[in-house]
Length: 422
Ligand code: CA
Image 1 (tube, rainbow, N blue to C red):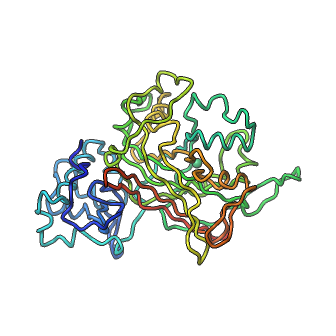
Image 2 (tube, helix red, strand yellow):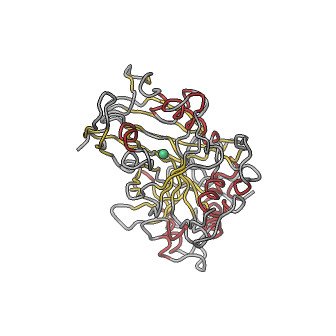
Image 3 (tube, rainbow, N blue to C red):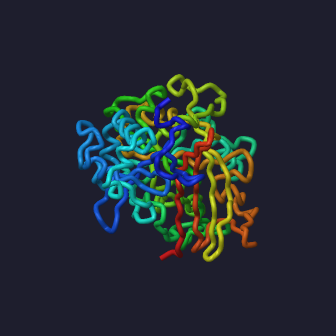
């Protein structure tokens, strides 16, 4: 076990009970203060550690990193240093924040390193090069297949053999807190042969997690399932916005396009795979057997509690979905192995969405499409209202956290308000 993951390790900082960011977490993000330069930060309790200042005052290995690694408008340079350098950094920060040493605690310049998160601005943590979205939840794929095709043959013949995915668009990946406008596009009414143009009427969220890669192998090389973890930096919560009515009309024959590329929202803190290590669990059994390049050993799934809330304008939020990442049929190692098996090269800062994560029962479905069963069964809200899909001025928030042995590894949240079409 990494020293940073010891559930008994304590920080000399007061960490509020139930915080997403105990000393066992230490997720990375990009922060700034008072319009100053953007820097790499690490969340700890209600504070964030300015890693750039930590470096400047000599707390970090000068051979592994440079000032520019940490005074930087994204995490990509740090991520590109690879797994070992990132692991060493998190271990060092964990030690400095632990009660096993007081060098940082007793530093008179401490207030330069540790800043209340409420006094900081958070920024897009990753310059996302390529974005790939998978379709790896069997419950989600079954629900969609049941609604739109054949309930007796909901899964397409390839689904249990291929971690199905498509290449999405990275330019419209945005940070939590940024509002989006309802997209417009072509849809085709059921009672007409011709399409119409206008604002999307069936706007939906997709509850997903995304992982971010370290630099992979050169073009032509493949990452095996046993190597995959060395190439994954960390994870965030991912709301892959979807326009269902646009999707329905456009997706044949080449798949998602304008129904998906108008926005995807991420949470600001990237939780490292090291911090998630204690929360590994066995995945669902895969029948029929997968091809050899997709076989894997050990626990590759993660027990991550996932929740989605809708907050109508001026009202309180309502929990509309409670799912878990552990339901994923295809795991990240298989996704990455499949993605690269043809020699496709992944780069540092690529983002891979899990696909909508639905659980086995209605309350755990990961999209309004499924929760309202194509709009036939509205979801009740706490204010007495109901939703079939997302309305203008609704705010959708997703939260994720792991808990075990009194340690809570949280992801914070991704929250996005939907404004009317422009
Ligand atoms: Ca998606």
